[in-house]
Length: 472
Image (cartoon, rainbow, N blue to C red):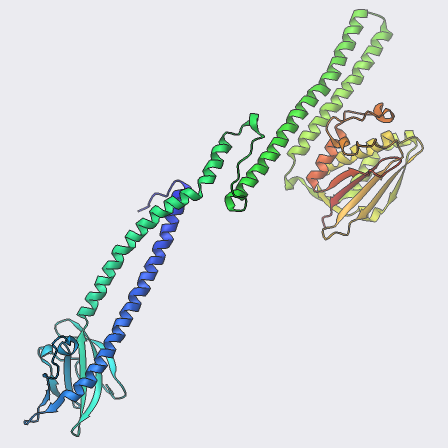
């Protein structure tokens, strides 16, 4: 038969608490029962030894040579142990010399056993002919030149009745104790889980419109408080992501609206003027330029979406970082030749260290960095690429890309990684793009487990530093 499981946590805690308590009480009751039985048995053995010693002094042979026991020794009939005793005396040949009336003619233990009672008081449990059991001790005693075996025992019926009564008392007391423990467990569990219920009620009221609300933590040091802190951290990240999504949506709408409006304006103006082929050609050129800008923005948005959704370890492989850098430089070879920009490399051997990443996304991230460096570099300049290795317990590959361009304006070294950020500096405004390239780079590098930043101490040019964990 399968019992239904408790549905809520409070009932389950109470159930397990009562179950464990029941098991402990049963084990404790069994230990107490066995201990009590052993104590009473040892007490009975002690009393029988004293009784045997006493009975040995009460035995005598009458005028006919029969063994007798003085029964008038006790003046108080309350001495029931001696009154209720069962006693049998045999000679070493097994002949019965004396048998107490309490045995009603039944033998006490059967024939003599070899060595019985020789060394000490031997004890054993025997079954009488009437089916009852007796605790018997045997002892060798010499009297008037004759050696006899004395057997003395007491019925175990009173002892077992007392133990059975004790067992009934335990079986009544344990369920009552468990019932009281269950009631107390319910009350304790309810009070202990009250903060959890309050947190759950408050969490149900948190929606997208009030993500700034947090759970109230009464005791931050206990397990419930720790869970509340973790949930609040999740809400912090969720609110941050929600705010980023709202800003991203607004910025994307703004950036997409600008080229679309330009396309429409150029087209409408060209149609209204109705001029010659030269004007139409110029209008088409402007339309193509804005279309290219729009396409670049859309591709950057798709790259951001792909970088954010690509988090599986299955999409990552191990490859030398310098190989990807060389691939990117090959793509930009035409631009370098037009601008007469040379490349200097240092630590190329270290650059062959393997990194674990999504190769396609990492190539896009490095393409954004190198393309920016070349775009803002003056003609006949040098782009320095260096590779080094950190001395941390978990080594990282450090790549630096330093150009000789106008550099980054003060206060913008971190903002350049924000989405749709373009610098207002006159030296770079004419060459600024959509403001998404470095955002893609930072997202990819972060997802790879590395870091990317610009050196703020550079006085001339820009120095981009990228660190990636090395996969041995």
